[in-house]
Length: 548
Image (cartoon, rainbow, N blue to C red; front, side, top):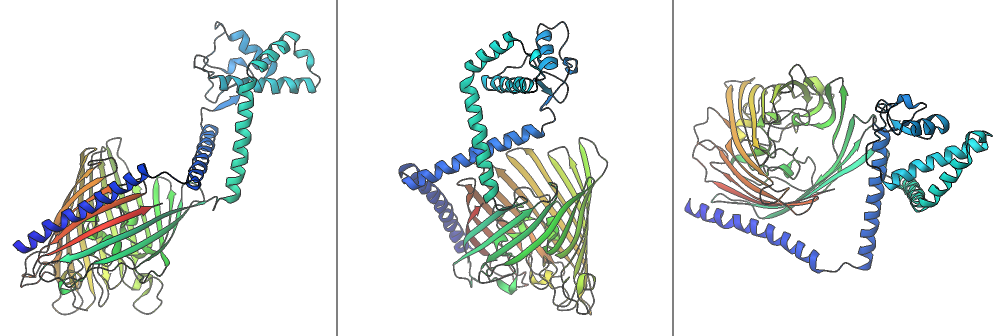
């Protein structure tokens, strides 16, 4: 054990040091190296595009704003303009005589608000356009010489602003046309993530070499109504879990969750979210898991198995959400409550073999898991949840398989393959809670109990698991995250060996909005839940995540 502790203490600073050296080198190189002319042009073009997009979005928001300007036909339509106001006569003339003054949709004029020269120029331009319209339609008797002289002087005074406004509008129209002509899709955006990970295990029973693994996810998010989302995710990678005693899945990390191999690309998730009234409905055609639609109540540690949360599958969410997966449906239904208490009910069903028409398979005859969870948010700081999952697991199936049918993704082999190769039924009960006393501290935890009814001989048993985590967001720098999680991985209740405890610490260092480095250590006691108590194992990982 002293040798193990020494290796742990030596290994942790190495990963932490590498992350800070890499980030400091990147920052220093960025501040010292002069960008090339090509790079400057790319930056200028990028900034220009961002400015254009910002202006387009601003104009779009103003157009959809319920308080945006709209044309009025009578000064009496302004609720905040009274006949006794000094500007009443002037407004009456402009509105009713020329029709070139707009008000807000809520019936106000807001005459006491500060006005910029550009806003005045825009209003002047509207009046000029209206006067020209009156002249061309032979209604010149409405326009006096004094008004024309005044408008001419104003036009000369604000000619620069008017020219600038016309130039901006012309430029926006040209750039908008260019963006629309070259955009990928009017309904779809691409969200991507690439994970690079260097990992190894240490201990007297270590059988692993240091490996450099990767996983890439490209998620095409399509919306048809603005409130729905179709996810078509393409994944590729070569990450596989480290080998630990008794074939346990305790060392599985989130970037190991990948059904392919050798960087082969395929659609690993196809799902559709859409609202029905106040409820959110989820339909998965492939690759669905419980945490896609149900709140896991584990903030900061949970990142939907992406590369910015906890390292391990155990620390990221309660193992109860790893029971079952595949294709099916789920719904989150809010009910009752007020501003403080916000309850909701989540229901779902996922089948692990939905595309297989063979006997003992299919959507309802194969492996499946049905979930029900009661959620309660108490204000913005406390969240509670009670979960029940009923599952059927065919021969050689794992309890915590996340829809992979045979491979376990968390817990010991004894807890996953309770039936010893025979089918079994599971009834699992979970409780989850999260408390955030401040924006800089979050405490979350869970407890799990599974009652296993084997369909063979003498294979009934119980499975237990629990965990507690402390997260410190923005620790040291905005966007960083320090996380510590400890608990017992799913273990078999009848086993006489020591419980398989899990202690994990990681620090996500945000280099930029799109790049983060996460060094971390996972300490496992008695991995594999051996009755002879296996030597402890320590897993060290340096994970780099790119998001785009």
